[in-house]
Image 1 (cartoon, rainbow, N blue to C red):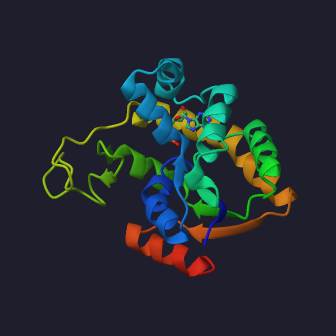
Image 2 (cartoon, rainbow, N blue to C red; image 1 turned 180 degrees about the vertical axis):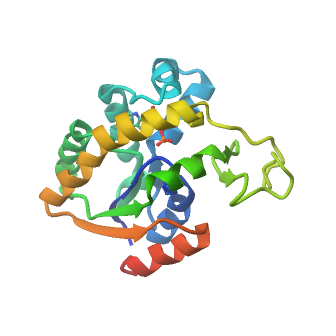
Length: 217
Ligand code: AMP
């Protein structure tokens, strides 16, 4: 189907859990700046080395670095008909940079999909989050792997993200999400971009069903 989509919500809203399947359904690549940055940190690239300290502290990596990385990604051939952005833009300056990139392609953002989850639920989810090497996300209680601590698909150990520690989560929610990222939603509302709000509470399957129902087929 194609189109430029953005999945929006606080850390722990379920963006990374829902986006891969949703992107496949929309027929566009899933473009997650957090995943791209973590891959660079793991690979020890210059970009990863520059980004790591901000990421570990739950702060935003510099706009310059992230906008350049995103610009290169959406210029790739597989993103020619669109993409599902996850974790970008994180502030209004990034949203303006994205507007310029999209204007150059002659195609604005089609839709902002908001996953609506209250703060207490976000904190509960993040405190049990475990991540596989390939990016698949589990939860110790809500979506556990078959054997504790082991990825069902590849059999490798699951990891906890360094920025999922409770103090860092609070910083990410209050000082980053509420103060810097939430205004991005107003930015797109003011621009008249279609906004679809989906209740992000409950099971992965329930949220997936709501997303499917909310999106034009
Ligand atoms: P995420 O996986 O989306 O929660 O991102 C993890 C971390 O990567 C964030 O807490 C930031 O440190 C960094 N990051 C991801 N996307 C961005 C972005 N668009 N701008 C700045 N930093 C980002």
